[in-house]
Amino acid sequence: MVRFLFILLVIPLTALATTPLNHIVATVNDDVIMQSELNNRLAVVTEQLQKQHAQLPPTSALKKQVLDRLILENLQLQMAARGGIHIDDETLNKNLRNLAKQNGMTLDQFRQVLEKDGFDYVAFRENFRNQLTMNRIRQQMVDSRVQVTEQEVDHLLATAASFNDQHREYHLAHILVSVPEAASHEQVQAAQQRVDDILARLKAGADFAQTAIAESDGQQALEGGDLGWRKTGQLPSFFSGVVGELQKGQISDPIRSPSGFHLIKIVDIRGDERHIIKQTKARHILLRPDTLTSEEDVKIRIQQLRDRIAQGEDFATLARANSQDPGSGSEGGELGWVTPGQMVPEFEKAMDALQVGEVSQPVKSRFGWHLIQVEDRREEDDTQEYRRTRARESIHQRKTDEELEIWLRRLRDESYVEYHLDEQ
Image (cartoon, rainbow, N blue to C red; front, side):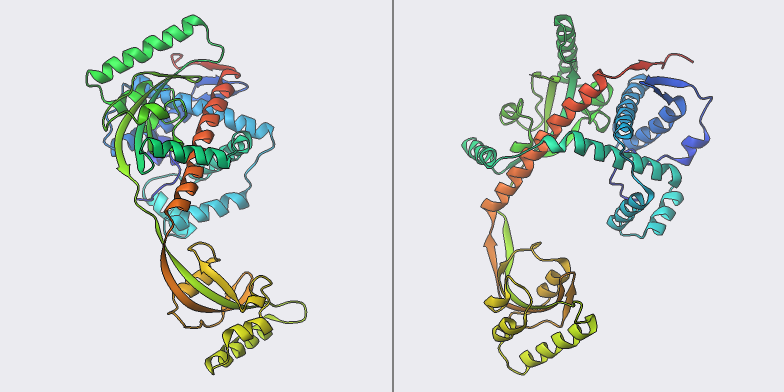
């Protein structure tokens, strides 16, 4: 089975083949959602939940959740269309090839596996195009607003240290009872009563994931409210303090935020190991083709330099005289200590295959042709810098999640949506 990286993209042929008489189930601004769309998505969601051995909520509750997600997707696609965002076939095929590659296949093999597993490839392509479109509009509306300062990173690391929490990650599940912007007192009270009722059922033994699927207004409702593993900095600010006080398996009391009332469950907790990286001290000689020097001439010249090194000439001297790398040439080709991921893949692969003191065969990258020599290797404790990077990523993810929740809620509140679920 293909390891899909986008959820709810594939539509079984059986679902398409058994579509009943079509009618409108929701009006979304000037667009509509049809019963066939709801049935197809409902079939996919049900199949996925069954494969996860999740306990299904009542059909009416699941149908409402799926329809709400379709409405939000529709609204995002409408906004993208108004903004002139369109994923052309070339971009779509490029992303499909990347998806296939991540599954260890060519695009043709990927399509064959999909169809063999009973999925409609044409529908998959269009749903994938929609996902890319929604990602792009979200980047415009949400990601561009998110900035992370070094002071925020410092504060997070200091806060985590004060709570002895810098080594911890939390696997969280979440239920949201939303409250509209500028909600009336009655609306807030109704939401408070609803979240209290949900919490009472959970304390009485109700399954959290099933309840989230049936009741949550959050973006992860159809995943059972699963937020995955989160570092402290990834936690929304309004419940970051609460999470640190809960034990594995515990559920929080209702937490109020601008979005509504939240219930958080700690599914699991794990520690963070020290981060040790392998570094390589290397130097290189770079030659590049240009208008006067052909690719073939460069290959001949770089091979001649390698032969001279093999015959005993000094690598650093040849690098100073010949290397066209403006940064390292004058330093005898010295690159210093190189961290994994720092160099282009072709360079790094060749460098990693060398023994200390060994000189590579000519290696081609997008910068030209290289000779590489490994001078030394070491293991370095990169924990502090690693934690800063992770903290920065965590803060960015948390801010993005918060902005996305606010934006989607505002998009939904400012749109005209009418349900026709009971109209047969």
